[in-house]
Image 1 (cartoon, rainbow over the protein chains, first blue to last red):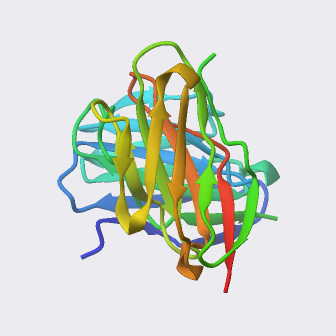
Image 2: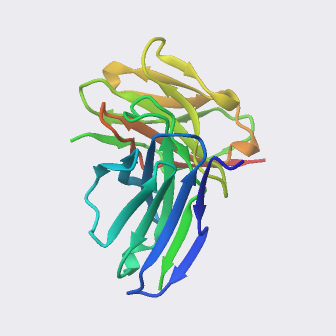
Length: 115
Length: 112
């Protein structure tokens, strides 16, 4: 009965590879997010989708491409991985579009290590 | 520019001690305020939130926070911590837009 799930939990890969992280929520929420948490634990939003439409696209290299096949899924594909991409990536969701006063429900995170 | 700052990077205290974590933001308009907690090996979860009304809000596990508008602050408090409060604590602010901006987090270590 996991609310927000991510796969894989751990990902170790070589520089230059392409990888994907998947996120699914079974809460019936309309909006999903990707956050990056760096080695200093700083959390920064990357993308947000509402009902499969992109609504937030922060300053992120275009090697990162989100895809939302339906409102319950938001995947993150990363091309040509670099050392600096090593981080923990969190998926989250909120019930509505605005998300201003809504609690964000986070997934367990995906630890990505680029060698 | 809008920003969120947490003053304490790492706080170490003993069980039964009182805890206060600072959070300040820079923005003159309406904000929505949150504290999230990340226990070791777990995902982030909401501790408490403030949108309007009584500036003293109570959350789960005995935590509370006070919004002081004149100081642009939303400090988190707990009168008596337990070993199980060891975690990473994040202040987050919604600056009346579609996203949350997080502070850098405070690591709290409670010694038994």
